[in-house]
Image (cartoon, rainbow, N blue to C red):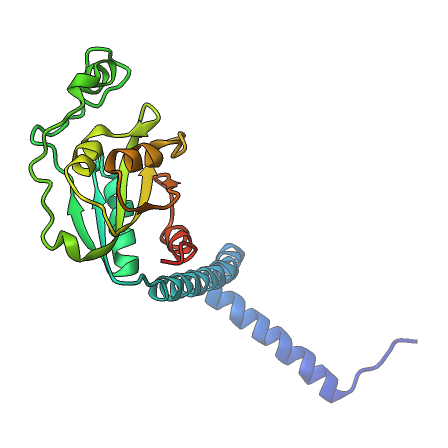
Length: 230
């Protein structure tokens, strides 16, 4: 015996079928329907990613804004390719410090920095210590005596601080200052570079330094500074 359906059930089924036909005619074909449904997860993911990025940026900004130092702070840096400059700028922004760039009177070119070439400038200077006394445009910092904390930044050359920084350190009196070395390199650590500069200065309280790579983030730098307890 066949099952019977009521008039009401018949109208519900008919209405659903009509709605399905109308939806199919509006969408055009099944492919466009699949395409439109696949956009939704992508959009949702994009919104979620944007929200996560915004939260991360806010957290980084909050961490940066809470880092402070006692007294007036200066960031001195020598940058051969721009990497050290980027870290120095981030440090200055993080603690509200002034910046001073160490600039050789005879700037280094990209050819000068080709350390794999024995005839390049840095190779010749490395092989002959007498050539490392690099003349600088200036070693005088306005208000030098007013700074309580000085960050000293440089790239690592052959395991030590790039020698233009040595020229700056030798020309200034670090008495009464907290000095924080930092360096940049592809793979080498900071090694004894900070200790050697401290010996050259023979004054000031020199803290342990830190090495940064090109990919170091602002939050990495801010976390390091927060741990210094300056």
